[in-house]
Length: 318
Image (tube, rainbow, N blue to C red):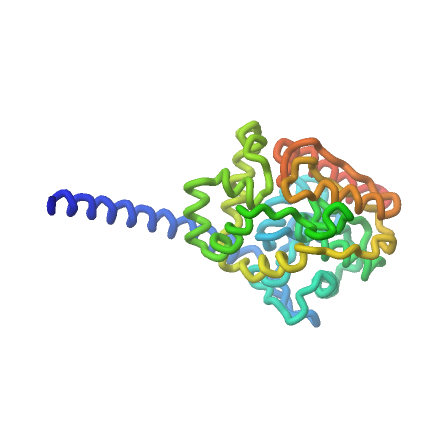
């Protein structure tokens, strides 16, 4: 019996060592990704981390929950091939942008303006994805002369249908947020063990949609999961986003004068379809593009979505 227990203990030790080595390797890759390619600039709104990529029409690409400058650059790869220059800030609490006392969407919008001042950019198109939508809307409301076009992609936004809870958050996501999205190792372990659970909770995408997607689209979703690491350096931002997006009030959408495009999907489990449709009805002249299926990360429609965005922000009127 002692020999058997010793063998089991040795096997467990070997498995634990191999697991830790794999984890350490993946985290080193993640750390290297967020440690290069960005800068921090001092502004009147505080230090702001950002990256700039590409050339052409400038687009302020505002990331969603769990993001940072790196998420924006990853999502916007197709735009770089379409004559768009991406300006990608890390919002409050993400990576190297600290959280100030006021972390409201309005304060974030003013910080976007401060960053543009530092970069010498007078007027830009703006894209707010998911939890990045509130500050994108506020930017175009508070600084209308600086907003040449507005794109809201699967946006966290107010709608009468979701007045009590802006984004539908299932209990499973609440568990993930409280126990997984605060630990690099916990998130890594779940990503290895059950990535489909994270696709459904973090990415609000039905598992059957993921299963029916092409191999390249499945790979895109899994790569996006990996890109949330190191989540410990995004935890503060996630908490801010959770507070802001839980019950968003109705913004003064009538004050948005820039051409506006909204994109969402009917089976987005966060419920952004109704939010986007309502917002499109309130912004004068807004265009609403929807797809029946694809979840919060628009599986099966990546090329079409970014083609819509590129055509909209680089149009002749911009």
